[in-house]
Length: 261
Image 1 (cartoon, rainbow, N blue to C red):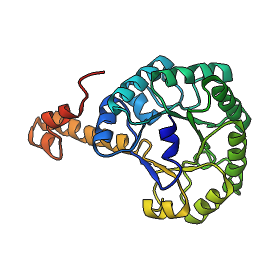
Image 2: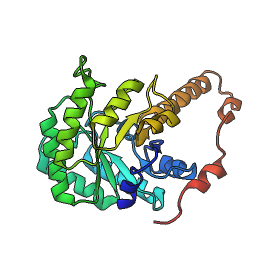
Image 3: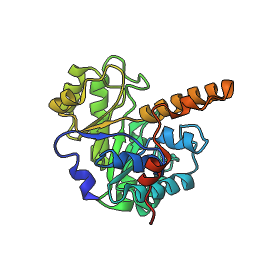
């Protein structure tokens, strides 16, 4: 598990988030250095909405599937808000993810208090020990929680999460270059950003000191968009040719999949 932590120590770790075992195998084949999931993509693939609705048993199974497909790469699981407001229950569920193969998790404050998330982080740390990389997601930007001072509020929350045992700080929605530089300087935790319109490119982010960049639901959303367009066209005229445009062949996809546990 320390291998995943080491990836945050220098340079920029880019994570093209997966949503099931097959997409994890694809990301591995394309050169990802670790496999992280997107909670939205996982939920959609299983026919559930995003937003702490997915049964924990399904998250545990996805963790097993992704870890198998990752073939030894570190795996980080998007744990949403922990699927409970009870820190002890969250910790017990996080332990199941570790046992299923997770080297890291994301856990978010959402609309809850930073103190609640800190309690969850502390409980997880106590339950699983020091190795699990806990990435604390701060939703100040996504939810507009501090419009007049989001950097200061995120830094305040980051300090609370670090004291509770977090290893990283995830601030989705932060895109302004000046604010990014300020955020890096105001937190002792490796800063994780989300692919978002207006975000500087990877080289610029690395120069600013950002240590992790996540695609989030961007790739799976694009995949759903392409699938929707193809389905609509096929239902309209039944033509086969568009289905092959830009597609990977059966043999190419099949070869990506591991054949053993």
